[in-house]
Length: 439
Ligand code: PMP
Image (cartoon, rainbow, N blue to C red; front, top):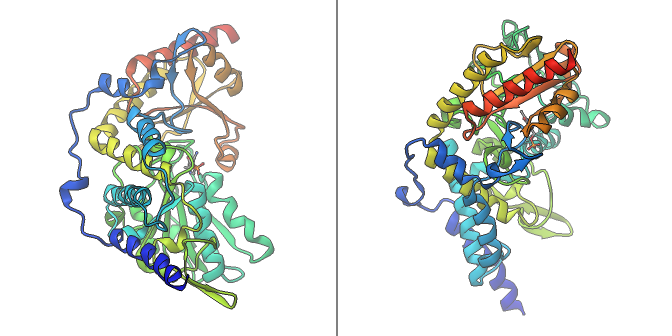
C-alpha cells in the first residue's frame, strides 16, 4: 500500500510534466490554410443541409452560437468510442491517450492565439466562466473596498454581473466608458478614468449586439501606462479576426468554444503567466492541488491551479479540432469573406422600408442589428423563422446598450464563414415581406 500510494501520484506528476513545457515539433500541429472554397465549407457542416418549415435553413444566428463541422462532431464520437478515460491521474493506456489529446488541444489554442506558453491557457466552461474566474481571483487576491474596474457601455452581461456579485463582500465600483450614436466607444476621457483605485480594465473586443470592433490596442496601451492590467472579452472576436495575445499585449483574454465552431461547455481563459502565478485559484478540488492536509493545501503549477475537478475532456479535444478546422481555412480568409458578406448585407437591408441599423461603427464585424419603428423584433424573428431564417431577437444579454439607444431589443443577423450572399438575399426578401404584411 505505501508503495502504491507513492507510485500513483508520481505517475500522474510524470504524465503532466511530459506535456507542459514539452518541445512540440513545429510541423506536428501546424496547419497551412487551403484556398477559401465556400461550397466545400458548407458541405463540411451537415446541419446547413436541413429544411426548416419546408424551407432550406438560412442560419444567421452565429453570434449566439456557430454550427459545427463534421470534423468536430467526429472528434466527439471518436473520443467517446476510442479514448474515454480520466486525464492526468491514470497510468493506463487510455488515460495516456486522452491526456495527450487534451494537452495537444491546449497547445493548439496556445499556437492559435500566439501565447508564450501552455501554462497561460486555462480550460473553462466558456467566456462567462473565464471572466468569473478572473473576478473571483481578484476578489481574493487584489481587490479592496472601493476599488474600481473600468468596463464599457456595450458589455455583455457576463462582463457586468460578475463584478456586481461581490457587493455583499467588497464594494467594487464599475466605471463605464460611454458609447456614441454609431456604437463606437468615446475614449476621450478614458485615461482620466484611471486612478490609483483602478485594478482592472475589462472590455469587450467585438460587441455582440452592435458588431463594433473596439480599438483595444489603444485601450491596452493607455491602461498599461498606469500599470493597470486589461482583460479582453473575445467571445465575438476569436472566430472573426486574427487574435494575437502577444501583439495585443492583453493581460487576460476570454473566449468560448461554441462561438468558434467547437462544442458548448468549453472555453478558454488566457492569462499572462506572471499574473496567473500571482493570483489565487478560483475553484478548489482535485487536480488543482499539489499537497492537501487538514491543515492546508499547496496548489498545483499552472495551468492546473485553475482547473479544479475533472475537466470537460471531450469538448476540449473537440475545441482543438475546431481550431484546426479554422486554421485550415485561415482566419484572414474567413475575415475577408465575412467582411464582404457584412458589407453586402448592410447595403441590401438599406432597401427595406422603415428599417434602421443599430450599430454603424466604421470598424465592424459580422453583426447586423436593426429595428423597425412599428414592428416588434419578436414578430420579425417569428416571421423570418417561417421562412427558414434563424436570427436572434431581444437584448442579446446587453441590456445597458439597449437602454443607451432607448430601445428594448433589436433583430440581429450575424454571419459566419459559411454564409452566402444568397442567404442575405433570402433575409432581405423576408424582411420586405414583413413590412408588406405589417403595413
Ligand atoms: N461576451 C460576449 C461578447 C458574448 O457574445 C457572449 C455570448 N453571447 C458572452 C460574452 C458569453 O459567452 P458564453 O455564454 O459562451 O459564456
